[in-house]
Image (cartoon, rainbow, N blue to C red):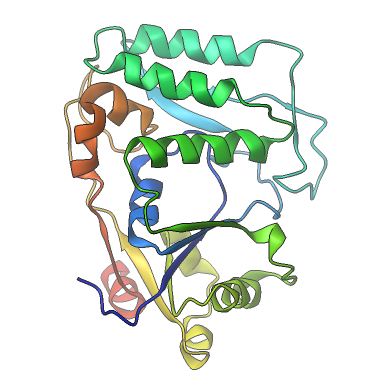
Length: 246
């Protein structure tokens, strides 16, 4: 149980049908900030997912149009010159044709694909939201877009300013932040930093050995709403996390 005076914040770029780890971050937070007014990085999970198929694990990637250097995630346009939605859906149909809750998974996909989308951020945010709602993770949580906060700057300073602007005093983050985050700066400002301690709890999967790094659509298709039972990772203080990495 967390102390009653903690207000935990997660700030993350939206992801296309994200892996279970992002849902675990959301479960731990009182406030989740979609961080999409930042530079799009080629190879990120904003526009691609891993799916287990009978043959192999493969990537499904949203095609993008005229991406410019420095362009923000919420500015990147979708390439609608081909029907990528039908292509992705057909691959998912085949990959999960023997899954117990395939129809639940396809319902989530259809819900997201039916929504108007003008940028990569639109699809990614809708993907996160559909999975959050399916696993009943939205209750008692506030979802915010960073672009609506009017906070500028970059790196640790901007992240800290966002946490404080939404009233947070604990910042929970994934492992990549260890390479750039100024932990002492956060502590001096009254904000504790915690890193995810991913448990990667196994659940029944089709097509070979278990892997936690596929889209959470895999969890839906194989386990249905009972899949919420594996969304259980916790976070640890940054000092312990750094020590464990050594």
